[in-house]
Length: 254
Image (cartoon, rainbow, N blue to C red; front, side, top):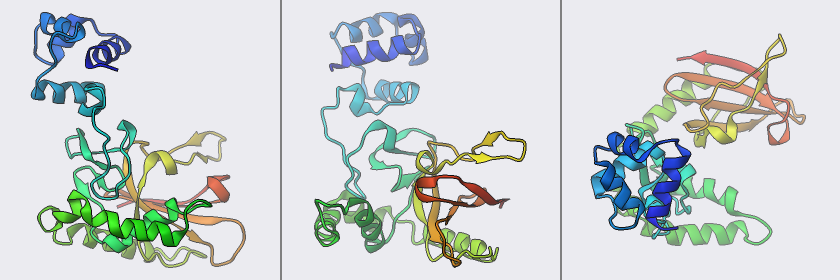
């Protein structure tokens, strides 16, 4: 789809007139009309404003001329999984798992490979083949080539270790010690818990990236422990396969 059609579709879906859109991005109504007629395209700064207004990538606004991939893990990027800067704007170089709220979540390539292999391996690709592919591909990506420049000197790793220590110090019965925390997007772990009065409640934001892990219960059985945390809270729950029948064990503000 061309930029003119994309802009018209986004504007109408948002219920905006050409004049209303023009005011929101500080241009004239005639400029919006020219965009939608295909006579011109917005300049770089206006594309940034449109990206923030409609919550889509600049790549999408331009008709997706580039195939975006995460410059940390190599995952193909669609708008719904693109990472965000601290101001909430989209960062079209990274996915939500590798970059969240202006923070890079991986500083160890081997740790990232372990996470990716678990998601890639299936009946068509073995764990060995997936690991070999990632070891060859990741060093070619911009984040790892520029790690000395982009890294935070271990600050985020220290924060993760602090969270691990806090979680282990809770001494939850039946839960093994947490060894590490991985980046998890809220949409995929936002379980609904049943309150005593019968109503359901969710504690997470689908669009936010959290730190967490899944642990097998030391007592055996079909239920697993789920651990989630960020700067503000620690959440521990149990559930069956595929997140079925979740039960909240602890929700603690930090």
